[in-house]
Image (cartoon, rainbow, N blue to C red):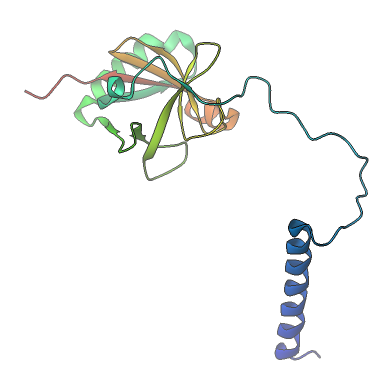
Length: 173
């Protein structure tokens, strides 16, 4: 029978060895043979590129919004009505300290500052800094100042959340 102290020592040595190999491979000091065929590095995904300014300004979407979502485009009018009714408990899009907006990312409990980003195709996105469109971005499908519809780029999030309908709530009296 192996004692727990001996087993712990063996586990620690194994973990240290793995860590040393990983760090050595990253540092460039140790050259490990490659078992794969040499191929050029993968190119960037088509459609992604550097950040461009969006045609929608952050201050245009800061405010109180009723929020609902739909999957079927035929449900859009009913969903807009449902979103309007949510103004009793509005979703607040805040102004960020760096010129962005404060919103939630998919599956994140804490809102964070996101950027409004444009693209060469004229589409607008909301998401963290980085390539456009990024996996955590949402596309602004339509925006008329009163109603904004967004859809997440990530296929899984888009399936779960659908088309997010934001209807601007009337200002408090």
